[in-house]
Image (cartoon, rainbow, N blue to C red; front, side):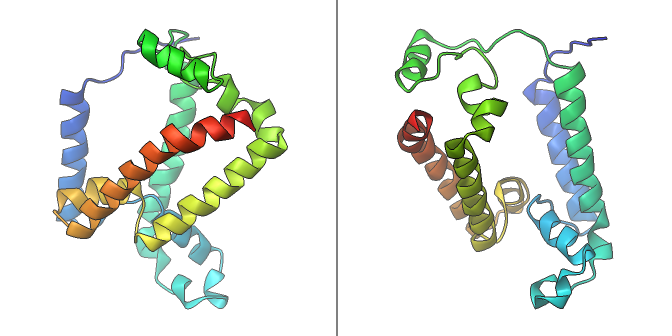
Length: 186
């Protein structure tokens, strides 16, 4: 059984995100995904090893439910709500991707990056490990992750979040234009 739905347009998805933010602010909560790792570690008894995990994690259980829902939603959308229609890219983009070794440029998840074989290779595993360490360090150093700063921080007009989001975008551009071509060749 395959159900195909068009993506929600920005004028529906955007206001729903804004409504979610208003509700979180009203109830005195903040949104962020990286804080869930801290909550999960605290639930698992990590406070024995570090004061950072010594807090009342029961107040954050709703955030863990959000992460579980995001995982379930990702599975449902990839299994039942996706199609075989590829990405429509310009010829310049297709040629740029071919130049760095990505031939499947119309796929949402190019095989050259997202295949199981790539994951099981030494270079693929090291890329994921190194990238995960950098993301974890960056989220901790910046005091939050991309979703927390870009959605909660910017909507509450926090200057540190603006600086962090600018850093995220610069990092993404550096990754895309300088590091990804190198990584693909490994």
